[in-house]
Image 1: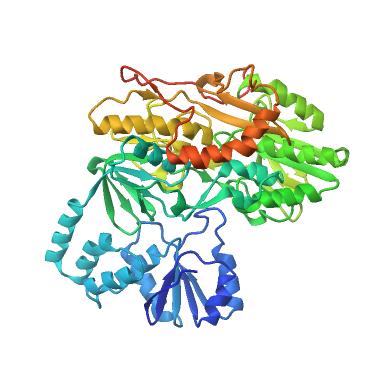
Image 2: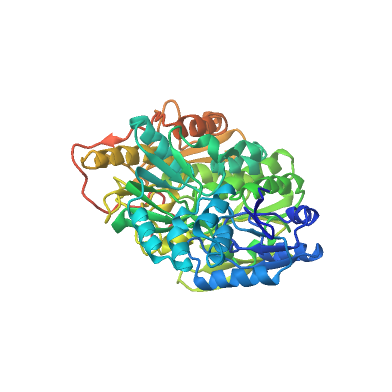
Length: 581
Protein backbone atom coordinates (compact mmCIF):
# COMPACT_ATOMS: atom_id res chain seq x y z
CA UNK A 1 0.00 0.00 0.00
CA UNK A 2 1.07 3.54 -0.74
CA UNK A 3 -0.66 5.45 2.08
CA UNK A 4 -0.49 9.26 2.07
CA UNK A 5 -1.43 11.11 5.25
CA UNK A 6 -3.51 14.19 4.43
CA UNK A 7 -4.62 15.24 7.90
CA UNK A 8 -4.58 13.72 11.41
CA UNK A 9 -7.93 12.11 10.61
CA UNK A 10 -7.55 11.16 6.93
CA UNK A 11 -5.14 9.30 4.67
CA UNK A 12 -5.63 8.32 1.04
CA UNK A 13 -4.23 5.50 -1.07
CA UNK A 14 -4.62 3.61 -4.35
CA UNK A 15 -6.75 0.43 -4.47
CA UNK A 16 -6.40 -1.80 -1.41
CA UNK A 17 -6.85 -5.57 -1.19
CA UNK A 18 -8.69 -7.65 1.39
CA UNK A 19 -5.38 -8.69 2.95
CA UNK A 20 -4.42 -5.01 3.39
CA UNK A 21 -7.26 -4.44 5.84
CA UNK A 22 -5.58 -6.26 8.73
CA UNK A 23 -2.48 -4.14 8.10
CA UNK A 24 -4.59 -0.98 8.18
CA UNK A 25 -6.18 -2.10 11.44
CA UNK A 26 -2.77 -2.76 12.97
CA UNK A 27 -1.65 0.70 11.84
CA UNK A 28 -4.49 2.28 13.81
CA UNK A 29 -7.08 3.00 11.12
CA UNK A 30 -10.66 2.71 12.30
CA UNK A 31 -12.64 3.33 9.11
CA UNK A 32 -12.45 2.92 5.32
CA UNK A 33 -14.12 4.91 2.53
CA UNK A 34 -14.12 3.22 -0.88
CA UNK A 35 -14.52 5.82 -3.65
CA UNK A 36 -14.15 3.37 -6.51
CA UNK A 37 -17.08 1.83 -8.43
CA UNK A 38 -17.10 -1.95 -8.55
CA UNK A 39 -15.86 -3.68 -11.72
CA UNK A 40 -13.81 -0.72 -12.89
CA UNK A 41 -11.07 -3.14 -13.98
CA UNK A 42 -10.35 -6.85 -13.96
CA UNK A 43 -9.11 -8.34 -10.71
CA UNK A 44 -10.48 -5.49 -8.61
CA UNK A 45 -11.82 -6.77 -5.25
CA UNK A 46 -15.53 -6.17 -4.83
CA UNK A 47 -16.77 -3.64 -2.32
CA UNK A 48 -18.93 -6.32 -0.67
CA UNK A 49 -15.88 -8.51 -0.05
CA UNK A 50 -13.88 -5.60 1.38
CA UNK A 51 -16.79 -4.58 3.59
CA UNK A 52 -17.06 -8.12 4.96
CA UNK A 53 -13.35 -8.27 5.83
CA UNK A 54 -13.50 -4.78 7.37
CA UNK A 55 -16.44 -5.84 9.54
CA UNK A 56 -14.49 -8.87 10.77
CA UNK A 57 -11.67 -6.50 11.70
CA UNK A 58 -14.07 -4.24 13.60
CA UNK A 59 -13.68 -1.35 11.14
CA UNK A 60 -16.36 0.96 9.73
CA UNK A 61 -16.71 0.80 5.95
CA UNK A 62 -18.55 3.02 3.47
CA UNK A 63 -18.78 2.56 -0.29
CA UNK A 64 -19.16 5.94 -2.01
CA UNK A 65 -18.40 5.17 -5.68
CA UNK A 66 -17.28 8.10 -7.83
CA UNK A 67 -16.97 8.05 -11.62
CA UNK A 68 -13.70 9.70 -12.72
CA UNK A 69 -14.15 13.40 -13.42
CA UNK A 70 -17.76 13.44 -12.18
CA UNK A 71 -17.68 14.69 -8.60
CA UNK A 72 -20.90 16.57 -7.85
CA UNK A 73 -21.57 18.95 -4.98
CA UNK A 74 -23.74 16.21 -3.53
CA UNK A 75 -20.80 13.81 -3.61
CA UNK A 76 -18.70 16.35 -1.73
CA UNK A 77 -21.41 16.76 0.90
CA UNK A 78 -21.73 12.98 1.27
CA UNK A 79 -17.98 12.62 1.72
CA UNK A 80 -17.96 15.33 4.38
CA UNK A 81 -20.85 13.62 6.17
CA UNK A 82 -19.05 10.27 6.03
CA UNK A 83 -15.91 11.80 7.49
CA UNK A 84 -17.92 13.43 10.26
CA UNK A 85 -19.80 10.25 11.14
CA UNK A 86 -16.95 7.72 11.02
CA UNK A 87 -14.38 6.88 13.65
CA UNK A 88 -10.93 8.17 12.77
CA UNK A 89 -8.40 7.90 11.46
CA UNK A 90 -9.99 7.11 8.09
CA UNK A 91 -8.43 5.69 4.93
CA UNK A 92 -10.11 6.74 1.66
CA UNK A 93 -9.09 5.03 -1.57
CA UNK A 94 -9.89 4.64 -5.27
CA UNK A 95 -7.80 3.41 -8.22
CA UNK A 96 -4.95 5.89 -7.61
CA UNK A 97 -6.24 7.92 -4.67
CA UNK A 98 -7.06 10.91 -6.89
CA UNK A 99 -10.84 10.81 -6.45
CA UNK A 100 -10.44 10.41 -2.70
CA UNK A 101 -8.16 13.42 -2.33
CA UNK A 102 -10.35 15.46 -4.68
CA UNK A 103 -13.31 14.80 -2.40
CA UNK A 104 -11.27 15.84 0.63
CA UNK A 105 -10.07 19.00 -1.11
CA UNK A 106 -13.56 20.08 -2.15
CA UNK A 107 -15.00 19.26 1.26
CA UNK A 108 -12.39 21.53 2.90
CA UNK A 109 -12.75 24.46 0.48
CA UNK A 110 -14.91 26.43 2.94
CA UNK A 111 -12.46 26.08 5.83
CA UNK A 112 -8.95 25.94 4.34
CA UNK A 113 -7.29 28.30 1.88
CA UNK A 114 -6.97 27.11 -1.70
CA UNK A 115 -3.19 27.37 -1.50
CA UNK A 116 -3.10 25.26 1.67
CA UNK A 117 -5.25 22.56 0.05
CA UNK A 118 -3.13 22.44 -3.09
CA UNK A 119 0.11 22.38 -1.11
CA UNK A 120 -1.13 19.55 1.11
CA UNK A 121 -2.13 17.54 -1.95
CA UNK A 122 1.20 18.25 -3.63
CA UNK A 123 3.10 17.04 -0.57
CA UNK A 124 1.14 13.79 -0.84
CA UNK A 125 2.05 13.42 -4.51
CA UNK A 126 -1.19 14.66 -6.07
CA UNK A 127 -1.41 17.60 -8.47
CA UNK A 128 -4.79 19.27 -8.01
CA UNK A 129 -4.08 22.37 -10.09
CA UNK A 130 -6.94 21.41 -12.38
CA UNK A 131 -9.29 21.68 -9.40
CA UNK A 132 -8.17 25.17 -8.42
CA UNK A 133 -10.95 27.05 -10.20
CA UNK A 134 -13.65 24.99 -8.51
CA UNK A 135 -11.97 25.28 -5.13
CA UNK A 136 -11.76 29.04 -5.60
CA UNK A 137 -15.44 29.23 -6.54
CA UNK A 138 -16.37 27.27 -3.43
CA UNK A 139 -14.22 29.53 -1.28
CA UNK A 140 -15.96 32.62 -2.68
CA UNK A 141 -12.97 34.29 -4.38
CA UNK A 142 -14.54 34.82 -7.82
CA UNK A 143 -11.79 37.11 -9.09
CA UNK A 144 -9.19 34.44 -8.44
CA UNK A 145 -11.52 31.91 -10.08
CA UNK A 146 -11.63 33.92 -13.31
CA UNK A 147 -7.84 34.16 -13.28
CA UNK A 148 -7.58 30.41 -12.80
CA UNK A 149 -9.97 29.66 -15.68
CA UNK A 150 -7.82 31.88 -17.86
CA UNK A 151 -4.76 29.91 -16.74
CA UNK A 152 -6.45 26.66 -17.79
CA UNK A 153 -7.33 28.14 -21.19
CA UNK A 154 -3.65 28.96 -21.69
CA UNK A 155 -2.30 25.66 -20.36
CA UNK A 156 0.63 23.89 -21.95
CA UNK A 157 -0.20 22.24 -25.29
CA UNK A 158 1.51 18.96 -26.18
CA UNK A 159 2.35 18.10 -29.76
CA UNK A 160 0.74 14.69 -29.23
CA UNK A 161 -1.37 13.33 -26.40
CA UNK A 162 -1.89 9.56 -26.31
CA UNK A 163 -4.77 8.08 -24.34
CA UNK A 164 -3.87 4.58 -23.14
CA UNK A 165 -0.63 2.88 -22.12
CA UNK A 166 -1.44 -0.55 -23.53
CA UNK A 167 0.04 -2.03 -26.69
CA UNK A 168 -1.47 0.60 -28.98
CA UNK A 169 -0.51 3.66 -26.96
CA UNK A 170 3.02 2.51 -26.18
CA UNK A 171 3.74 1.40 -29.75
CA UNK A 172 2.39 4.64 -31.21
CA UNK A 173 4.53 6.71 -28.82
CA UNK A 174 7.64 4.71 -29.70
CA UNK A 175 7.02 5.01 -33.45
CA UNK A 176 6.45 8.76 -33.12
CA UNK A 177 9.68 9.22 -31.15
CA UNK A 178 11.55 7.14 -33.72
CA UNK A 179 10.46 9.62 -36.38
CA UNK A 180 10.94 12.84 -34.42
CA UNK A 181 12.75 12.88 -31.06
CA UNK A 182 11.78 16.52 -30.51
CA UNK A 183 8.05 15.86 -30.30
CA UNK A 184 6.42 16.82 -27.00
CA UNK A 185 4.37 13.69 -26.20
CA UNK A 186 2.30 12.66 -23.19
CA UNK A 187 0.76 9.24 -22.46
CA UNK A 188 -2.31 9.29 -20.21
CA UNK A 189 -2.55 5.99 -18.33
CA UNK A 190 -3.66 5.34 -14.72
CA UNK A 191 -2.33 1.78 -14.37
CA UNK A 192 1.21 1.04 -13.23
CA UNK A 193 1.45 -2.44 -14.80
CA UNK A 194 1.57 -3.41 -18.48
CA UNK A 195 0.69 -6.94 -19.59
CA UNK A 196 1.76 -8.96 -22.62
CA UNK A 197 -1.70 -10.42 -23.10
CA UNK A 198 -0.85 -12.77 -26.02
CA UNK A 199 1.24 -14.74 -23.52
CA UNK A 200 -1.73 -15.66 -21.35
CA UNK A 201 -2.69 -18.50 -23.71
CA UNK A 202 0.69 -20.08 -22.97
CA UNK A 203 0.26 -19.47 -19.24
CA UNK A 204 -3.01 -21.39 -19.45
CA UNK A 205 -1.19 -24.14 -21.35
CA UNK A 206 1.59 -24.50 -18.78
CA UNK A 207 4.29 -23.07 -21.07
CA UNK A 208 4.81 -19.59 -19.56
CA UNK A 209 4.64 -18.40 -15.97
CA UNK A 210 2.33 -15.44 -15.61
CA UNK A 211 5.15 -13.18 -14.41
CA UNK A 212 6.74 -13.53 -17.86
CA UNK A 213 3.81 -11.47 -19.19
CA UNK A 214 4.10 -8.58 -16.73
CA UNK A 215 6.22 -5.40 -16.85
CA UNK A 216 6.03 -2.14 -14.94
CA UNK A 217 4.41 0.68 -16.93
CA UNK A 218 7.27 3.01 -16.04
CA UNK A 219 9.85 0.69 -17.61
CA UNK A 220 8.07 0.77 -20.98
CA UNK A 221 7.29 4.47 -21.39
CA UNK A 222 9.56 5.60 -24.26
CA UNK A 223 12.41 7.91 -23.34
CA UNK A 224 11.39 11.54 -23.68
CA UNK A 225 7.66 10.79 -23.35
CA UNK A 226 5.84 12.15 -20.29
CA UNK A 227 3.69 9.68 -18.39
CA UNK A 228 0.61 11.32 -16.89
CA UNK A 229 -0.68 8.75 -14.44
CA UNK A 230 -4.35 9.63 -14.44
CA UNK A 231 -7.67 8.52 -15.89
CA UNK A 232 -9.39 10.41 -18.69
CA UNK A 233 -12.78 11.80 -17.72
CA UNK A 234 -13.82 13.42 -21.00
CA UNK A 235 -12.92 14.40 -24.56
CA UNK A 236 -13.33 17.96 -25.87
CA UNK A 237 -12.34 17.80 -29.54
CA UNK A 238 -13.69 21.25 -30.39
CA UNK A 239 -11.15 22.80 -27.99
CA UNK A 240 -8.39 20.22 -28.66
CA UNK A 241 -8.34 19.10 -25.04
CA UNK A 242 -9.13 16.23 -22.72
CA UNK A 243 -10.12 16.40 -19.06
CA UNK A 244 -8.74 14.14 -16.35
CA UNK A 245 -10.41 12.75 -13.23
CA UNK A 246 -8.55 15.38 -11.21
CA UNK A 247 -10.31 18.15 -13.14
CA UNK A 248 -7.14 19.07 -15.01
CA UNK A 249 -7.38 19.82 -18.74
CA UNK A 250 -4.64 18.75 -21.15
CA UNK A 251 -4.33 20.28 -24.59
CA UNK A 252 -2.95 18.76 -27.76
CA UNK A 253 -2.14 19.46 -31.39
CA UNK A 254 -2.82 15.82 -32.25
CA UNK A 255 -4.61 13.17 -30.20
CA UNK A 256 -4.05 9.41 -30.43
CA UNK A 257 -6.74 7.33 -28.73
CA UNK A 258 -5.90 3.74 -27.76
CA UNK A 259 -8.02 2.98 -24.67
CA UNK A 260 -8.53 -0.74 -25.23
CA UNK A 261 -11.86 -2.42 -24.62
CA UNK A 262 -13.99 -3.77 -21.77
CA UNK A 263 -14.19 -7.43 -20.81
CA UNK A 264 -17.85 -7.58 -19.86
CA UNK A 265 -17.89 -10.36 -17.26
CA UNK A 266 -21.28 -9.18 -16.02
CA UNK A 267 -22.90 -9.89 -19.40
CA UNK A 268 -22.97 -13.56 -18.38
CA UNK A 269 -25.22 -13.95 -15.36
CA UNK A 270 -23.34 -15.40 -12.38
CA UNK A 271 -19.95 -15.46 -14.10
CA UNK A 272 -18.10 -12.83 -12.10
CA UNK A 273 -19.11 -14.41 -8.79
CA UNK A 274 -17.65 -17.81 -9.67
CA UNK A 275 -14.51 -16.88 -11.63
CA UNK A 276 -11.41 -18.55 -10.24
CA UNK A 277 -13.34 -21.25 -8.39
CA UNK A 278 -15.79 -24.09 -9.04
CA UNK A 279 -13.82 -25.01 -12.16
CA UNK A 280 -14.62 -21.69 -13.88
CA UNK A 281 -11.64 -19.99 -15.52
CA UNK A 282 -10.51 -17.71 -18.35
CA UNK A 283 -7.20 -16.97 -20.05
CA UNK A 284 -8.48 -13.44 -20.59
CA UNK A 285 -7.33 -12.42 -17.11
CA UNK A 286 -3.78 -12.32 -15.77
CA UNK A 287 -4.77 -13.79 -12.42
CA UNK A 288 -6.86 -16.61 -13.93
CA UNK A 289 -4.65 -18.00 -16.70
CA UNK A 290 -2.58 -19.96 -14.18
CA UNK A 291 -5.83 -21.34 -12.71
CA UNK A 292 -6.63 -22.67 -16.19
CA UNK A 293 -3.41 -24.69 -16.11
CA UNK A 294 -4.16 -25.92 -12.59
CA UNK A 295 -7.53 -27.21 -13.76
CA UNK A 296 -6.12 -28.81 -16.90
CA UNK A 297 -3.25 -30.68 -15.28
CA UNK A 298 -5.39 -31.90 -12.38
CA UNK A 299 -8.36 -33.04 -14.45
CA UNK A 300 -8.54 -36.82 -14.81
CA UNK A 301 -12.05 -37.27 -16.20
CA UNK A 302 -15.32 -35.40 -16.64
CA UNK A 303 -16.67 -32.63 -18.85
CA UNK A 304 -14.68 -29.65 -20.14
CA UNK A 305 -16.44 -26.79 -21.91
CA UNK A 306 -14.84 -23.94 -23.84
CA UNK A 307 -16.87 -20.91 -24.94
CA UNK A 308 -16.68 -18.08 -27.47
CA UNK A 309 -19.06 -15.06 -27.44
CA UNK A 310 -20.17 -12.94 -30.41
CA UNK A 311 -17.54 -10.79 -32.09
CA UNK A 312 -15.71 -8.53 -31.57
CA UNK A 313 -13.27 -10.02 -29.09
CA UNK A 314 -9.54 -9.81 -28.45
CA UNK A 315 -7.81 -12.42 -30.62
CA UNK A 316 -10.66 -14.30 -32.26
CA UNK A 317 -8.77 -17.60 -32.01
CA UNK A 318 -7.92 -17.44 -28.31
CA UNK A 319 -10.98 -19.37 -27.04
CA UNK A 320 -10.17 -22.40 -29.19
CA UNK A 321 -6.44 -22.12 -28.47
CA UNK A 322 -7.29 -22.87 -24.84
CA UNK A 323 -9.20 -25.96 -25.94
CA UNK A 324 -6.43 -27.27 -28.20
CA UNK A 325 -3.66 -26.91 -25.60
CA UNK A 326 -5.83 -28.50 -22.92
CA UNK A 327 -6.73 -31.44 -25.17
CA UNK A 328 -3.10 -31.89 -26.18
CA UNK A 329 -2.08 -32.19 -22.53
CA UNK A 330 -4.87 -34.68 -21.80
CA UNK A 331 -3.92 -36.69 -24.90
CA UNK A 332 -0.24 -36.83 -23.94
CA UNK A 333 -1.15 -37.93 -20.41
CA UNK A 334 -3.60 -40.61 -21.66
CA UNK A 335 -6.65 -38.91 -20.14
CA UNK A 336 -8.46 -37.51 -23.17
CA UNK A 337 -10.67 -40.59 -23.67
CA UNK A 338 -12.15 -39.98 -20.22
CA UNK A 339 -12.87 -36.28 -20.80
CA UNK A 340 -15.87 -35.00 -22.78
CA UNK A 341 -14.73 -31.82 -24.58
CA UNK A 342 -17.04 -29.32 -26.27
CA UNK A 343 -16.53 -25.91 -27.87
CA UNK A 344 -19.58 -23.63 -27.79
CA UNK A 345 -19.36 -20.64 -30.11
CA UNK A 346 -21.90 -17.90 -30.74
CA UNK A 347 -20.65 -17.83 -34.34
CA UNK A 348 -21.58 -20.02 -37.25
CA UNK A 349 -18.07 -21.10 -38.29
CA UNK A 350 -15.00 -22.46 -36.53
CA UNK A 351 -12.74 -19.58 -37.64
CA UNK A 352 -13.50 -16.39 -39.54
CA UNK A 353 -10.98 -16.89 -42.35
CA UNK A 354 -11.91 -20.03 -44.37
CA UNK A 355 -8.36 -20.90 -45.49
CA UNK A 356 -7.38 -21.90 -41.95
CA UNK A 357 -10.46 -23.96 -41.13
CA UNK A 358 -9.39 -27.33 -42.66
CA UNK A 359 -6.27 -27.54 -40.46
CA UNK A 360 -8.29 -26.63 -37.37
CA UNK A 361 -11.02 -29.16 -38.17
CA UNK A 362 -8.40 -31.92 -38.26
CA UNK A 363 -7.42 -31.07 -34.69
CA UNK A 364 -11.05 -30.92 -33.58
CA UNK A 365 -11.40 -34.45 -34.98
CA UNK A 366 -8.10 -35.58 -33.44
CA UNK A 367 -9.21 -34.45 -29.99
CA UNK A 368 -12.78 -35.71 -30.37
CA UNK A 369 -14.19 -32.30 -29.46
CA UNK A 370 -17.84 -31.49 -30.09
CA UNK A 371 -18.21 -28.08 -31.78
CA UNK A 372 -21.56 -26.44 -31.06
CA UNK A 373 -22.32 -23.49 -33.34
CA UNK A 374 -24.69 -20.58 -32.64
CA UNK A 375 -24.56 -21.23 -28.90
CA UNK A 376 -23.88 -18.22 -26.69
CA UNK A 377 -23.12 -18.57 -22.98
CA UNK A 378 -25.61 -16.46 -21.01
CA UNK A 379 -25.40 -17.77 -17.42
CA UNK A 380 -23.30 -19.89 -15.07
CA UNK A 381 -24.21 -21.47 -11.75
CA UNK A 382 -20.77 -22.17 -10.34
CA UNK A 383 -21.85 -24.10 -7.28
CA UNK A 384 -24.09 -26.41 -9.31
CA UNK A 385 -21.55 -26.47 -12.18
CA UNK A 386 -24.17 -25.71 -14.82
CA UNK A 387 -23.71 -23.45 -17.85
CA UNK A 388 -26.71 -22.03 -19.72
CA UNK A 389 -26.52 -21.29 -23.45
CA UNK A 390 -28.80 -19.33 -25.76
CA UNK A 391 -29.07 -21.59 -28.81
CA UNK A 392 -30.13 -20.02 -32.11
CA UNK A 393 -31.87 -22.47 -34.44
CA UNK A 394 -31.83 -22.50 -38.24
CA UNK A 395 -35.12 -20.60 -38.29
CA UNK A 396 -33.78 -17.92 -35.95
CA UNK A 397 -35.63 -19.07 -32.84
CA UNK A 398 -33.65 -18.94 -29.60
CA UNK A 399 -33.94 -21.57 -26.88
CA UNK A 400 -32.06 -22.09 -23.62
CA UNK A 401 -29.94 -25.18 -23.01
CA UNK A 402 -28.18 -26.20 -19.78
CA UNK A 403 -24.89 -28.10 -19.79
CA UNK A 404 -23.14 -29.56 -16.75
CA UNK A 405 -19.37 -29.16 -16.50
CA UNK A 406 -16.39 -30.03 -14.36
CA UNK A 407 -14.28 -27.33 -15.97
CA UNK A 408 -15.32 -24.40 -18.14
CA UNK A 409 -13.05 -21.90 -19.90
CA UNK A 410 -14.97 -18.72 -20.64
CA UNK A 411 -14.18 -16.01 -23.13
CA UNK A 412 -16.22 -13.02 -21.89
CA UNK A 413 -18.31 -10.78 -24.15
CA UNK A 414 -16.41 -7.62 -25.03
CA UNK A 415 -17.56 -4.05 -25.63
CA UNK A 416 -16.24 -0.52 -25.77
CA UNK A 417 -15.22 0.97 -22.43
CA UNK A 418 -18.01 2.72 -20.54
CA UNK A 419 -16.33 6.14 -20.52
CA UNK A 420 -15.83 5.91 -24.30
CA UNK A 421 -19.48 5.17 -25.09
CA UNK A 422 -20.50 8.73 -24.21
CA UNK A 423 -17.51 10.38 -25.90
CA UNK A 424 -18.07 12.68 -28.90
CA UNK A 425 -15.32 10.89 -30.85
CA UNK A 426 -16.95 7.43 -30.91
CA UNK A 427 -19.65 5.74 -32.97
CA UNK A 428 -22.91 4.44 -31.54
CA UNK A 429 -21.18 1.32 -30.18
CA UNK A 430 -18.49 3.34 -28.40
CA UNK A 431 -15.56 2.63 -30.75
CA UNK A 432 -13.28 5.50 -31.85
CA UNK A 433 -14.62 6.26 -35.32
CA UNK A 434 -11.74 6.16 -37.79
CA UNK A 435 -10.99 5.85 -41.48
CA UNK A 436 -10.30 2.13 -41.93
CA UNK A 437 -7.07 2.78 -43.83
CA UNK A 438 -5.50 5.98 -42.47
CA UNK A 439 -6.86 5.42 -38.93
CA UNK A 440 -7.63 9.15 -38.87
CA UNK A 441 -10.89 10.20 -37.24
CA UNK A 442 -13.74 10.63 -39.71
CA UNK A 443 -14.85 13.99 -38.22
CA UNK A 444 -11.86 15.39 -36.31
CA UNK A 445 -8.78 15.48 -38.50
CA UNK A 446 -6.25 15.78 -35.67
CA UNK A 447 -7.47 12.65 -33.87
CA UNK A 448 -6.33 9.09 -34.64
CA UNK A 449 -7.23 5.71 -33.18
CA UNK A 450 -5.61 2.30 -32.96
CA UNK A 451 -5.76 -0.91 -30.99
CA UNK A 452 -8.78 -2.71 -29.60
CA UNK A 453 -10.82 0.44 -28.99
CA UNK A 454 -11.25 1.72 -32.54
CA UNK A 455 -13.90 1.02 -35.16
CA UNK A 456 -11.99 -0.58 -38.05
CA UNK A 457 -13.22 -4.17 -38.71
CA UNK A 458 -9.82 -5.80 -38.25
CA UNK A 459 -8.98 -8.63 -35.86
CA UNK A 460 -8.19 -7.16 -32.44
CA UNK A 461 -4.68 -8.52 -31.87
CA UNK A 462 -1.25 -7.27 -30.80
CA UNK A 463 -0.03 -8.14 -34.29
CA UNK A 464 -2.59 -5.71 -35.69
CA UNK A 465 -1.23 -2.98 -33.43
CA UNK A 466 2.28 -3.70 -34.70
CA UNK A 467 1.11 -2.67 -38.19
CA UNK A 468 -1.21 0.13 -37.04
CA UNK A 469 1.30 2.07 -34.92
CA UNK A 470 3.62 3.01 -37.83
CA UNK A 471 0.59 4.12 -39.89
CA UNK A 472 -0.65 6.35 -37.08
CA UNK A 473 2.84 7.71 -36.42
CA UNK A 474 3.43 8.59 -40.08
CA UNK A 475 0.03 10.24 -40.43
CA UNK A 476 0.35 12.21 -37.18
CA UNK A 477 3.72 13.56 -38.30
CA UNK A 478 2.19 14.46 -41.67
CA UNK A 479 -0.64 16.29 -39.92
CA UNK A 480 1.75 18.29 -37.73
CA UNK A 481 3.71 19.26 -40.84
CA UNK A 482 0.60 20.26 -42.77
CA UNK A 483 0.54 17.28 -45.13
CA UNK A 484 -2.19 14.76 -45.96
CA UNK A 485 -2.47 11.38 -44.21
CA UNK A 486 -1.22 8.95 -46.86
CA UNK A 487 0.03 5.92 -44.90
CA UNK A 488 -2.52 3.11 -44.99
CA UNK A 489 -3.37 0.11 -42.84
CA UNK A 490 -4.48 -3.00 -44.74
CA UNK A 491 -6.42 -4.54 -41.88
CA UNK A 492 -3.57 -6.94 -41.07
CA UNK A 493 -3.95 -9.15 -38.06
CA UNK A 494 -2.37 -12.37 -36.92
CA UNK A 495 -3.63 -15.18 -34.75
CA UNK A 496 -1.10 -17.93 -33.90
CA UNK A 497 -3.48 -20.83 -33.29
CA UNK A 498 -1.71 -23.13 -30.82
CA UNK A 499 -3.20 -26.42 -32.00
CA UNK A 500 -0.82 -28.53 -29.90
CA UNK A 501 2.23 -27.99 -27.75
CA UNK A 502 4.97 -27.50 -30.32
CA UNK A 503 2.80 -26.61 -33.34
CA UNK A 504 0.92 -23.51 -34.46
CA UNK A 505 -1.35 -22.66 -37.38
CA UNK A 506 -0.15 -19.11 -38.06
CA UNK A 507 -3.18 -17.22 -39.37
CA UNK A 508 -2.26 -13.90 -41.00
CA UNK A 509 -4.94 -11.97 -42.85
CA UNK A 510 -6.24 -8.52 -43.78
CA UNK A 511 -9.58 -6.87 -44.54
CA UNK A 512 -12.00 -9.20 -46.30
CA UNK A 513 -10.18 -12.28 -45.01
CA UNK A 514 -7.41 -11.84 -47.59
CA UNK A 515 -4.31 -13.81 -46.62
CA UNK A 516 -1.34 -11.58 -45.84
CA UNK A 517 1.55 -13.86 -44.83
CA UNK A 518 4.80 -12.39 -43.55
CA UNK A 519 7.03 -15.17 -44.84
CA UNK A 520 7.15 -16.97 -48.22
CA UNK A 521 5.12 -20.17 -48.38
CA UNK A 522 8.22 -22.33 -48.98
CA UNK A 523 9.49 -21.22 -45.57
CA UNK A 524 6.25 -21.14 -43.61
CA UNK A 525 2.79 -22.15 -44.81
CA UNK A 526 0.45 -20.55 -42.30
CA UNK A 527 -2.47 -22.76 -43.29
CA UNK A 528 -0.66 -25.84 -41.96
CA UNK A 529 0.50 -26.63 -38.40
CA UNK A 530 4.18 -25.82 -38.03
CA UNK A 531 6.93 -26.22 -35.45
CA UNK A 532 8.57 -23.06 -36.79
CA UNK A 533 5.38 -21.12 -36.08
CA UNK A 534 5.41 -22.47 -32.51
CA UNK A 535 8.98 -21.26 -32.10
CA UNK A 536 7.88 -17.81 -33.31
CA UNK A 537 4.99 -17.80 -30.84
CA UNK A 538 6.97 -19.01 -27.82
CA UNK A 539 10.44 -17.58 -28.39
CA UNK A 540 10.33 -14.69 -30.86
CA UNK A 541 7.02 -12.90 -30.41
CA UNK A 542 7.51 -11.78 -26.78
CA UNK A 543 10.85 -10.21 -27.75
CA UNK A 544 9.31 -8.77 -30.90
CA UNK A 545 6.67 -7.14 -28.69
CA UNK A 546 8.83 -5.72 -25.90
CA UNK A 547 12.13 -5.06 -27.71
CA UNK A 548 10.95 -4.03 -31.17
CA UNK A 549 7.30 -2.94 -31.29
CA UNK A 550 7.38 -1.02 -28.01
CA UNK A 551 10.78 0.48 -28.87
CA UNK A 552 9.79 1.92 -32.26
CA UNK A 553 11.69 -0.67 -34.33
CA UNK A 554 9.33 -1.43 -37.20
CA UNK A 555 10.77 -4.74 -38.41
CA UNK A 556 8.48 -6.08 -41.17
CA UNK A 557 5.97 -3.36 -40.26
CA UNK A 558 6.84 -0.39 -42.47
CA UNK A 559 3.57 1.17 -43.68
CA UNK A 560 2.54 1.53 -47.29
CA UNK A 561 2.64 5.21 -48.28
CA UNK A 562 0.34 6.40 -51.06
CA UNK A 563 0.99 9.46 -53.18
CA UNK A 564 -2.45 10.78 -52.23
CA UNK A 565 -4.88 10.63 -49.34
CA UNK A 566 -7.16 7.58 -49.77
CA UNK A 567 -10.89 8.15 -50.01
CA UNK A 568 -13.10 7.00 -47.15
CA UNK A 569 -14.79 3.71 -47.99
CA UNK A 570 -16.16 0.61 -46.29
CA UNK A 571 -14.16 -2.61 -46.02
CA UNK A 572 -15.21 -6.15 -45.19
CA UNK A 573 -14.40 -7.65 -41.81
CA UNK A 574 -10.99 -9.29 -41.62
CA UNK A 575 -12.28 -12.24 -39.58
CA UNK A 576 -15.98 -12.98 -40.08
CA UNK A 577 -17.56 -15.65 -37.87
CA UNK A 578 -21.01 -15.45 -39.47
CA UNK A 579 -22.13 -18.57 -41.32
CA UNK A 580 -22.61 -17.74 -45.00
CA UNK A 581 -25.27 -19.59 -47.03
